[in-house]
Image 1 (tube, rainbow, N blue to C red):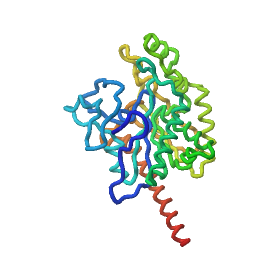
Image 2 (image 1 turned 90 degrees about the vertical axis):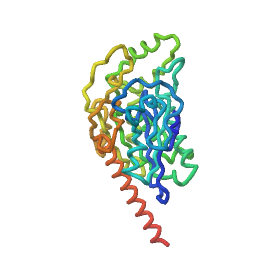
Image 3 (image 1 turned 180 degrees about the vertical axis):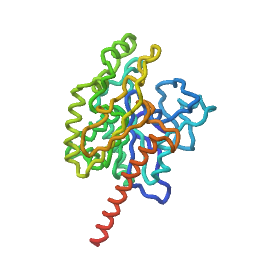
Length: 330
């Protein structure tokens, strides 16, 4: 099952195939490790219940999460890390990673900072790598929105650590595919207004620190970004970077809904790190829909799937060279 927090394995290579890499999906603000990557049936877009503890089991296919099980008449939901990606790349292990990304939880939202979430991600990955040699493979991250900032912070922390198991994650990272990550912040968000609206309810204590980290000119973002540039330079391998940003026109907010997905739309400039080695593309969808694909013909899936396939081909080539070098010394 896809757990609300931590790592959940949703695909393993077929019997007889060895694992070439790990692909780890990290969701963004207000997201979760299942729904962020799931396309619901078009005939059913109603609002789903919040705060479910677990999500759809990885088998059998197709399956429904608790959030989509109310809408089975409209057809299956597509959780593309499990339902689409393995048809493009079979010899990988695919994970989702979840954390508390809700700043407006009833009673009290998690008060963890970006750096605390980054530390949790590192620990979970290090724990997984200790369980089997299957997991001590190159890592590819696919990240959305705030998830990209957390992964950058995690790689920075791993690079700076000496003498602990956490130091192995950064050197093992082969590439990061950023989807709508606000590297320079989001000018669409107004922290003061959002915090005020949440705290009008006496039962809520919002986590505004996550929002502060996403604002334009955020000291947190600047520090993470500057350090990440050094992390890339100090990496033992050339870290591959791909950015995708939405081309969707921002719509007006409807009704009294406070957390419309449209306030966190990331513009093209903020979606780029600015490194000369990065590849930049676009997905014709809004900030929320850019991570949800209905089938193999979806242009977003084609673009991301092609990039992940190229990276795994490079990893296979590196592995073959390493094997040849070992054989030549025997």
